[in-house]
Length: 348
Figure 1: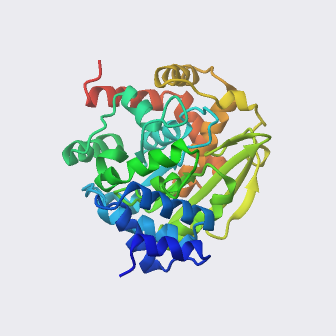
Figure 2: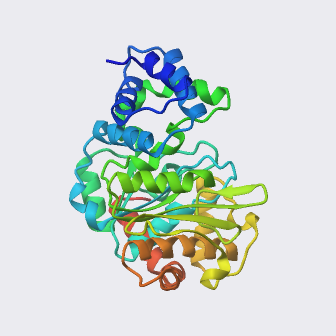
């Protein structure tokens, strides 16, 4: 059997890993007995070589299999995840979280996977817990949440115990300013395995490979996206920049760029989509629901929610999805959903 060091040497010689080798490596990285130094050498070699679609998919398969059972796979075929890799450093608003909330308020089941902030002031876990959703791995809590609210949140650290022995090496790499395959794996290892997804990616070069990896993993329908303009980038669709888009599953024929004008929206400034703390972002959401707030942020959220509604077969196209999303955001439907969240979880 190849050791992790042997697989590192193979990549340093310029060779890609086979699927079996990549799966073995993923398991080695989760083992306690292998040193952080050996793990770091492997991850640096993999990143330097550049990860292949097959390697990414193999890693995702392993960590999906090692995740705790969510107990919600019965919803997988009808549910969607709206999620980003994070890591853009743009201090963006919680766009995917609010978009997912709009989708849930529309009646579509949302199985959302996420974590606390790393490069922004408010990650999905920070924002949603501030709203009142628990960061719980209790299956009964999650089952009640998806049944009553069309929404449940999987707090990544609670569902991936295998990552306990990976975090030390991730910290070592972060101290060196280096990324690894773990910067892109999160959205691929949702423990409930929803078959639809709107995936935001931190770098446009990963849009197509991650779409292909999710197709290889059997996802039915989705989009992988990134937005950029000047020195700014976002792991969402935005009305600020050029959106690089690649389809997943039955949408795999899509490989293009979209702009705000393609959907009847105005181009906006990047300052419109900046965010703050979870508390500040909730206040911005209340302003948007009340008819104010940054127009570019309202349009950007509607664009993401509209795309998600289309992916989930709840809108005939993205333009119709945008219209539905704005009605839900501005017309009291989202507020009623948030009130229901507060009641369900006894939020004061």
